Length: 407
Image (cartoon, rainbow, N blue to C red; front, side, top):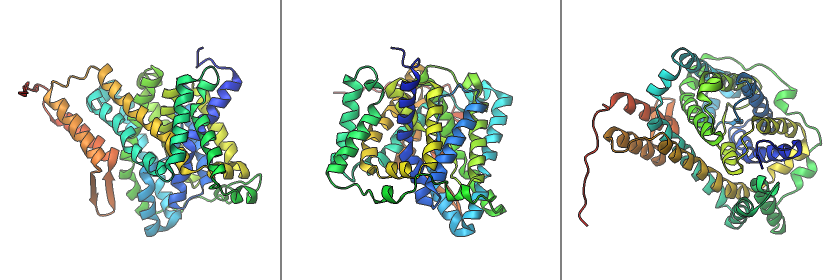
């Protein structure tokens, strides 16, 4: 069966499943920073459609709430208020636009020079490994639910046939949710109290952000991290789909699409959006990489954002259930990074390659951070920048000397 040539019904089911994968993280970010989760679903859907329009509908990427901005938004809100912070978030798009412009001018030469496989590979690995801690934290709230969800997804993935094989994530979530109901830990009150149709407050009472220079300047350097993650994710999606999206439609288009989506999200009082590795992991597992399916997920996000009871139902899914699923998804992302290094024939007999790989991974996994006043850079963003700098500075001629260990 050609999984990318599915019937409309099957595409719809897989598309809804992909939203399930992205749902937890998409609504978690606004809940943590004080924004409306329904608005985040709406801006994720709109942002994804904008991205697909700019990229000519060729790249199977879903845009959801960016975790990179949780701490900056909280800090900026204390300093300038939410209205000022939202105005500051409009500056994020400028970074995307600038890098897009540079890539458009320099093309593949710029990418090969600044983002070769020895830099991109470790970044892809970090995208999976650094997210793994959040998966474990979600899972450990109830390991029984997490393991039931994980095992169900694995069994469906390995033993399932036909339509069932395409929905391991939904299967895991449904089984985990049913077990949670029998365990008596689901609170149905939010579902009962929720209206059937509910437009998010920030959309029902729309107003432009209160522009201020302070938060605007503050947010611009923070955008470096998600921009680099974006580049890594585009390579990941290309590896999963077995297509070169850096060449067609071009990285400049994917960056431009993400940037416009971030701008629209800020104007609609939503968090910045970014390429979602969770959905990429789901594509890797299901082998469904059709952009149409991703657009179905985006349309579903728009529907969920205005159906009050449905959104409330989804928000009652226990974190442990989602965590169990994420344990599988994030691991697949890290494995794609390893595969990227292998397929690109990165020579680890070169000293410079070992140094770049080692330092990038240890800084990212170790949680290295760089702070100066209100500015802070850490995690994947800092590690990726270090990897880029090492690649540009280190000479390419030296090779590792063989070291024999006496046994």
